[in-house]
Amino acid sequence: MHHGNAPKAEHFITMPSMPAICLDDLSRDGVRDLFSAVLNRDPDPDVVRTLHEATGGNPFFLSELLTEFR
Image (tube, rainbow, N blue to C red; front, side, top):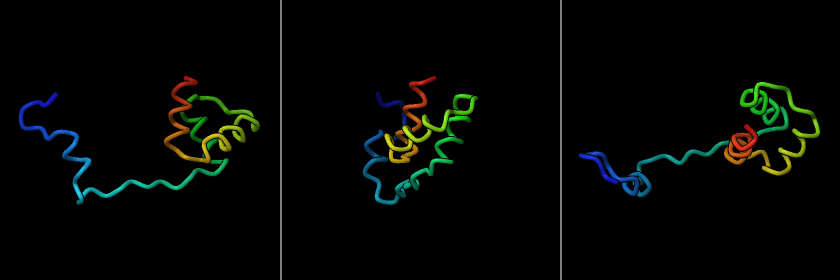
């Protein structure tokens, strides 16, 4: 749906001047820290290892998994 003068999403997707957002993969410590921040508890080290392996440390994938856990 297009409201007023607001640009459509397609406009942003095709804008060459928009910088790409590239995040580095998280370390296991980073996975643990994000888990703790999102779920307000410390994870078991085996859970951290499994999440790190499953997501490759990708912060977007990890965020989605943690959202599902919540």
